[in-house]
Image (cartoon, rainbow, N blue to C red; front, side, top):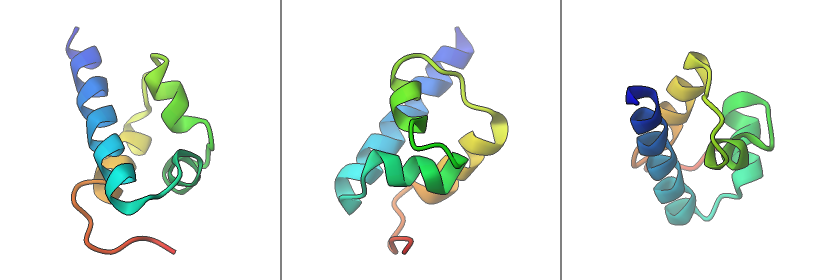
Length: 68
């Protein structure tokens, strides 16, 4: 149950970041996990590896600059 809550919070953070930066979900997935389906798979119930979750949190939370 706790893992599900963490995953849902992570998805929410990512969605906010994607909306704010207009970055595509596939680009975000490639940057974070080297997987263009990362965001879609999270939406469908995939549990992220710790490294990918940390990478997503480092990139997503209110980043003022957008990666190139």
